[in-house]
Image (cartoon, rainbow, N blue to C red; front, side, top):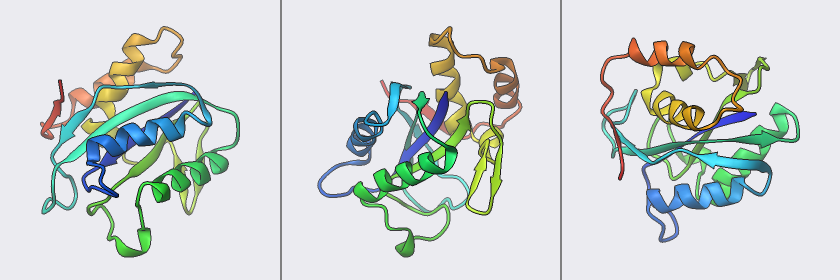
Length: 163
């Protein structure tokens, strides 16, 4: 099972950030089997606060390939939805960001790929939707209480579920 964190705060090609997240899930479902998605959340920006709020969600499913292959696939989805890393600065505005949060129980530590995501435990915009999906899925064999404790220890980060 893989957990992907998705976020957007810029429009692209006539699609709003909310629409781009829907497009990303459709594209991801081409290779992520049984894709289940969380609700949509509006989140205040972190790290670089002088930008529009983000729309965030989590997608969970099964990927038949390696973490490296998943990274290549998610980056191709980002590019299709307007992401151009050469024109961005770290943690700045972007049309699509897809992070690999978890890849089963695997740990990866490479220069451009670290799994579990190194900032997973400090990001309510990932933990809240991730725990939402986990609570609906009895097949999830991940220590949910660990992530719930991580979330409980965080200060308010301005995350709100979109009805």
